[in-house]
Length: 281
Image (cartoon, rainbow, N blue to C red; front, top):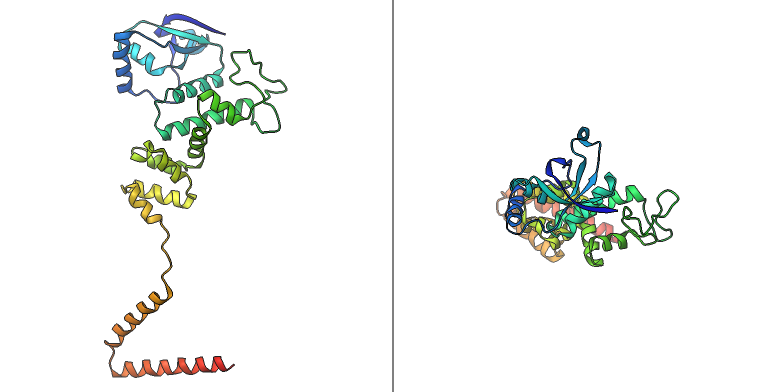
C-alpha cells in the first residue's frame, strides 16, 4: 500500500545510494522546482527506528529531487510512502534510475546487472521449468510489495519492469555481465562509456584482450588505436617470406670477406648433399 503526504525534509534519512548525488544535476533540478514546483513526489519507506527515531522515513527514490528541495531551502516535500523492505527499496531505486534514462550506456548496464543480482537474491533464480517462488509461496499479484507477477522468466519480468525491449535488455545485460571490472573502471571518463556499440564490441573480447584494452586506456591511448593493437597480424605469404630471406642474405654476403664466403659455399654444398641423400632414402 502506498500513501501520499507532505513531510518535513529533516525526517528523511538518505542512507547509502546506488547512485551518488551529482550536485550540478541537483542544482538544475532545484531551478526547475523553483519555477514549476515538485512535479513528481519522491519515494520513501517507513523506518521508525532509523537514526534513533529522528528520521522515521528513508529515501527510496528521488535523491536529486530531495537535494534540489534542500538547495531551495524547502522545509517540507511531497512524498509517496511505500511498503517495502530494504531489498525492495533497492530494486525500486535502481529501476527508477534506469527508467528515467539519465544514465549513460555503461551505468545503465551496470544498474540492470545490479537489479538482476538483487532480485535473484531475494526471489531466487528463475528458469523455464518453474514458477517464481518465495519460500514455498508464490507472491500475490495484488500485493504492492511484490514487484513481479509469478510464472514468467526473469528476463521478461525485468524487461517489463524497466520498460525495455528485448534487444535493449539483451545488449545492456551483455555489457554488464561480460565487461571485466578492470575494463569498466578504465572506460570511465572516455567516450566509450557513452557509446553502446563500442561497449558491446569490448564485451565480446576475451578476458586477456580486455586486460590489454584496459592497460592501453590507462596509459592514455584512444580506443581506435587500441583496436589496431588487437587485430591479428596475417601470416606472410610463403613467396614473400622467401624473397625477404633472399634480400637479407644478399645484404650479408656483400659484407663477407673471402674466408667467410668460402665457409658459406661449403655449408651450402653440405646442405645440398644432405638433401640428395635424404631424397634417395
